[in-house]
Image (cartoon, rainbow, N blue to C red; front, side, top):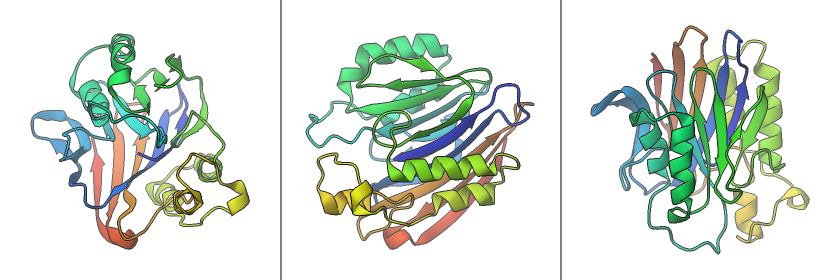
Length: 248
């Protein structure tokens, strides 16, 4: 994932609302959102190159999602970050137990943000900061830096999510994720990738010949434990490839 905006509202009829874009090279093979045959209580996309995933839900209210930390100078990692999401969804460790394991192994991965949730708690872990944080009620955003780092697309998408919370519907959440507007040069962060790339990556929805938004996913969780997932898949230049909707 390269952008996740989410509302955490414990005690609300819809305690967790998530809208997220996965940005990746189009050539990297993956499967869209689906029930996992080998873990039938898990619903997520699948990275066919390394076997992990970027966002999904599991049994007992489990939710996990990941963004990469953009750092062109970080060393090549030994392990794929997508396994961090997949393992949490398929194992039965508590969040505390799982985060203790992740902290001990974080140097084996390139930089990442990890969101982990159950029906009654939501946690964030940034591998550069090294300290897990239980999140209070609120509206948050993650891109490729820290939690709520004020990059233009994060600010825009987080504000738009706030406006939908009176009646969050999949269509409105997907519309937030489909915004192709590039930020003005003066507002771009400097993450070491050059001005042209910073500009390309500054829009909520990214489209180019080789790299862009591969999947837009929305999750609406309900207090009774049911969850509504919608995912749209895209190819080069933002071409629409399909849509999956699940109510579980």
